Image 1 (cartoon, helix red, strand yellow):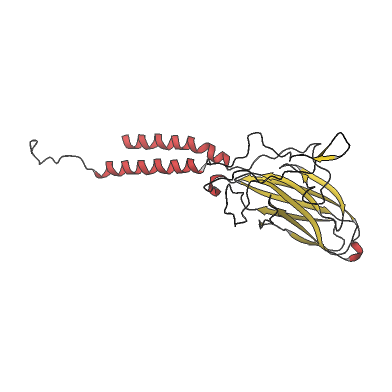
Image 2 (cartoon, helix red, strand yellow; image 1 turned 45 degrees about the horizontal axis):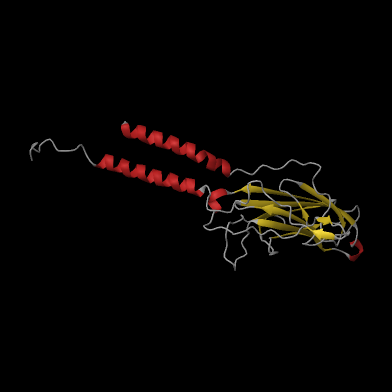
Length: 266
């Protein structure tokens, strides 16, 4: 009975400790759409329009344009980028493609999703999606693993008839992330996130010229690259369970004590 009570109390304590870890693995909340959502896109990496996760950004353009947005992603997040292109009323068959690049402008592979899709003649819209790999806190210099920092979205048409070039189109993009947690944690951390030194915004100086400003991406609690993850919680749970198993095995195998047939003074 004593062993049962000890095990029950230990499991209750472990359940309370694991509660926050389970909560950390839930999807991150999305920001509500508001008037601050971008309504235009950049035309290059340097002029990419900043989009926060959870925002729905819109833009107008023409077939043949390159549309660029940028968004921040932190350690342990698995970003999902979705895009919807509103096509003109009359058009031929055309293929659109969604690419995502990291802060070093390396093209990131999609785990799954329709990254490239062909719209049939007369189709009203075409929808694209790209689910990136989980952002890591550290990586080898030669690897192309996703690291915390700024990511770029590029949306463009890659195949269409010459007669359809330059027709007006509308685009909508949205970025959401799921917090994966310690299951994807790695040892080590990145010294600084891969955030560019300049962004699409600019300030007007006294002489009338425009001066680039630092990227406005920021986090209230800072970037989370570091040694802590909920993997440490589960490691502690495993250590406690192993200790309890050892104590229980000892109690069950030690027997009733001194045999009754052995004299007390033996």
